[in-house]
Length: 449
Image (cartoon, rainbow, N blue to C red; front, side, top):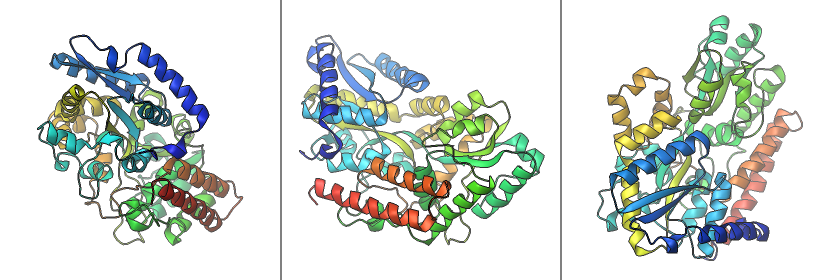
């Protein structure tokens, strides 16, 4: 357990977080809960409207029974939340439940002794629980090699295309189904006045990770890290990836594609009407609806028609809920009850319909169907269709590699060099694979493999 996040923390971060934890302890840690109800600390990275929705669900659970009070605590960004959790665990004062982003999954799973697998908790508390209660692409991402859920899928999304219906009507085109069509559609949009054909959010996640899964490609050896930690090598410098990145590089010169920055910084290029399409998280729906002054639609990601088996399936991005070890024994029944509540059709339907995330349980999906949600918002089905397009194969269940945040940074730097015309796609992906393989070896060593 000494290896839990050891490489990820520097002394300054530990010091800052330690101070915050000391403050937290003075004003309400576990030992201070002498009231009738047992308080369950739920650390999360949900701010603004998302944070309000989390609070609403916690309030509903709290009002539904009289033994426990779930208290959501906003801890900053995903990365800050994970770092705070690592520091709290080391200080023997972890939260009860913590939201960890998808790219932290491998790090958490390797930290055996820091958490209680969700399937074990539910079994102990005698709550019926099965991976089959969840949509397959969400379950596979957070399951162990035996198919048991280690953490509870929570806020989950997948990339889709948002498109400007007015610009598409003007150009007389339909959303592209393949990458070859993307080029032709983009050129027509440009010819009829669009400043750019499309832009992309989260470039490494959308254009490399999800590109690989949607097209049925191997992203890394050992089934993308699911089978092993030691000896895993990236495969992102193979021909399909090189051709894809070269295509994006060429389109960035012609205007079919315009790079707008990391994460979701390119979204304003679409919301402002500058770009006719935006490839990004399906959870962008609320932000786009709130800002776009034009009618927009949602379409599936394009696939490479030259690859057999494509399209395959996408997987979820977002985060899951982890149950920490080292808590008072009296807390675990309350945690299990809250997780059961979060899996319910009612909670999932509320969460999905108020945030743009997909319902992660089949009960939630069925409840939204009964309520007519997908008839009112057919675009919301696109993400579901992508995630369930085909049963995941061994190498399309997800990408489970250590140091994923750093790996994404490396990939993004190399992709940006291609977009700027400073590097060829082959050279950029060769360099990304070389640097990434080094990181993966370091991660394997850090967990004793």
